[in-house]
Amino acid sequence: MAEPLNLDISYEDLMTQKLAGVDPTLDTREGTSLIYNATAANSIETVQMLATIQANNDRVFADTAPREDLIRIAMERGLKPFPATKAKWKGVFNIDVPISSRFSLDELNYVVIERTAQGEFTLECETYGNIGNLFSGPLIPIEYIDGLTNAELTELLIPARGEEDTEAFRERYFNSFESVAYGGNRADYKQKVGELDGVGGVRVYRAKYGASTVGLTIINSLFGKPTQTLIDAIQERVDPLGMQGEGVGIAPIDHIVTISGVNNTVIGIVLNITYQDGWTWPDIEANVQSTIDNYFKELAEEWAKSIDYDGDHSGVVVRISQIETRLLGVPGVLDIANTLLNGGASNIQLDKESIPVRGVLVA
Image (cartoon, rainbow, N blue to C red; front, side, top):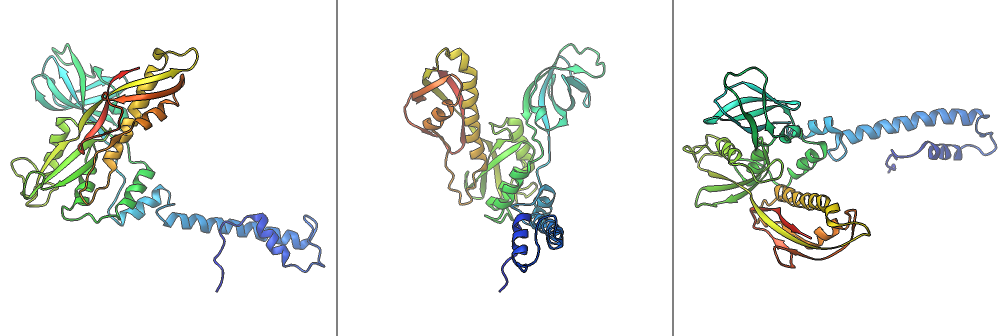
């Protein structure tokens, strides 16, 4: 049986193999012999051919395919990368402004899409992606509006997301093999609801409110607690109130689905820090806060990406060791010990529908 073709062989190794088969009485010196020069030219072409074969092999397998080929592979399972979306904000004005009126804030523009109360409107950022989530504050009308004296962007209602990156899409593709999504099963809800604007993840609960009910707990695409606006929007898409169980939305007929949002659990932290020479708490406070916030965001992402197809959901665990290890990498921190979480010296396992947020930080 022939040995498999070695696609990773180098030019040097290929030359060594070929010259080893030449009659040793013949001249094979580099640069001067016809045998060497002919073999070298052939070896260069062979290496180029093998590289092309390897590249083509990589393109047809999902673990190595570049983005454009991965998309084609995943389409066979009905999957596409999540597209970029636009952020929706609450705007507060001293008067009712016209629907479709446009406002600017720094370099971004926003358009009024819905009235929610007297002087309160929903605005949509005209720019796709995460940048639309970042800024709030006074708005400037792009066209004159009579009687307008105050306009402000106050609350992010539905966060935007950028186009799904390649590695996240690759992971989602492989995860799709763990359970087949169809007909309102657990995987079906996780896939379809997870694709909706503003949703970063969903947990599914069978018979949460009684027979024929399904409970869906969502986290927003910034991995934080969703607003009531987002919860209401997802409820409308999945199983509209007043028509629940009728199969009008994503949910199949006879499924009475209720959407809720993940809760915040406030974690108060007491730190016992030994500082490097010349450093004090004010020097490192902001860095410590961001380090803890990043850890808590990772836990929220863990909550969002959990694949509990058997329904055995568990809460994330806030670990003292993780906090201390990460803070040891903060400039100015020499050592840290005896950290307390909510007044205790133990890790905290959160409720299965909760994510951690930083509370009072004492050092």
